[in-house]
Length: 268
Image 1 (spheres, rainbow, N blue to C red):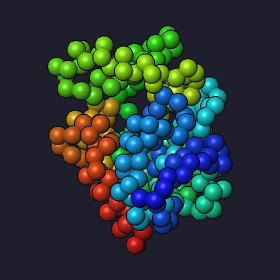
Image 2: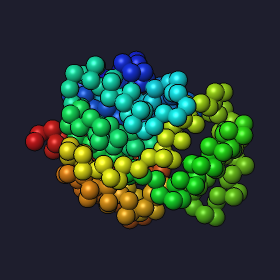
Image 3: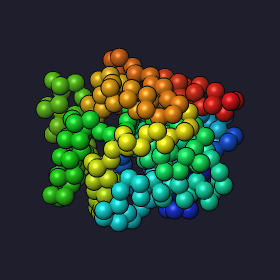
Image 4: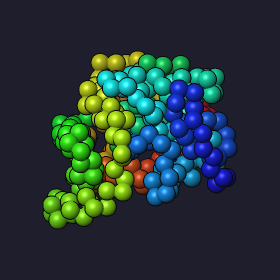
């Protein structure tokens, strides 16, 4: 894939961009800060973009930096909508992973004129009960000054049950270097997603929509994935029976499934 460039969209969303073709905007999952990812995070963020970049100009976007306390998911999606409207002047192909899927879905609800097709990866119209508990605990630990512990409990929650307790101290050490000095953007995003529930607004989503999930996702359930697809105007769901949140989010199989859907929507 061609060289990766960086920038910031109007509205404040930092991005990594690569590839050739019509614009495909891909909203990142939860990150410690709202900077364009670097290092290992950058390699992970661009893994799907490598699959898509032969057919699209892929913009991997994070959320705006400097969020105001109390901003809602609609506010956060609005920053990205401003960037899409002013940068591209019309609708784009849109994907979102995990928290990024919440942002992408809210954007498709609020600004259907800006979305040609939507792919939600390991995401649904709201968090499941276990997912909400995990993120609430992360917010609590972060507010208490221990963001590393918050990230550690989130990552270990995605591991097989026998590994969670033994791996928690290890994960906490590993996450110390990633814990943000200023957690404001993270906390605003966590609070916004805690309150996020687009269930009553799904009929506003007019773009062709694919929801990709895993039946063993700790943050969502099969039912939430399937309900999201069923309640938009033109949706379908694909749920991998044995997959969890992390595998669904990062697998090249997921990226290729999304690509096929996006190319079909592009051709239509």
